Length: 145
Image 1 (cartoon, rainbow, N blue to C red):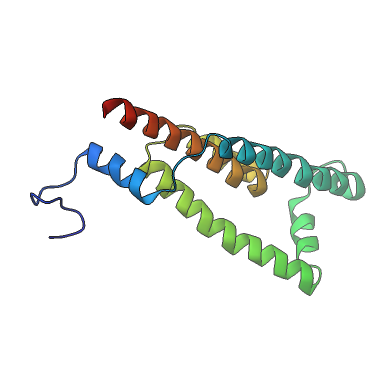
Image 2: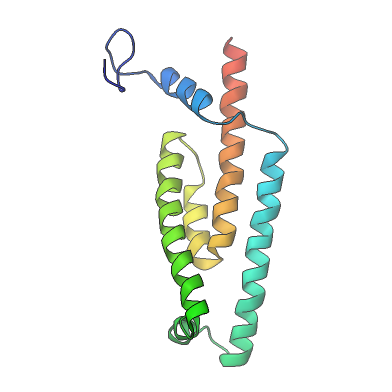
């Protein structure tokens, strides 16, 4: 039997997929979503405070070329920039995959927020939306039982 088949050998139904999500995901916690939302708010505010300082110090527009140059100005900055680039790329791939798997709404907000606000906003905001979706699935499956 392949991982994609159930005991009868057929492709799993959407109910099987939901059951798999509930089994393979940590149980949803009502309070955890609010921690993620608070982190998303901090992830929007703190990077943009630094961005505002950059704009104040280096001109009235957000000069992306200058920003990238400064992000690579020394080995410590290069390390953090490359760490963020690789980590954010991997997490963004997971975010897209997980959002599709859970049939989540609002993925566009996460992806747009990642490039316009900050990845530090987008990742916790996705986790907030994901936790809400897991709670929704959990409540839906408990009413069917």
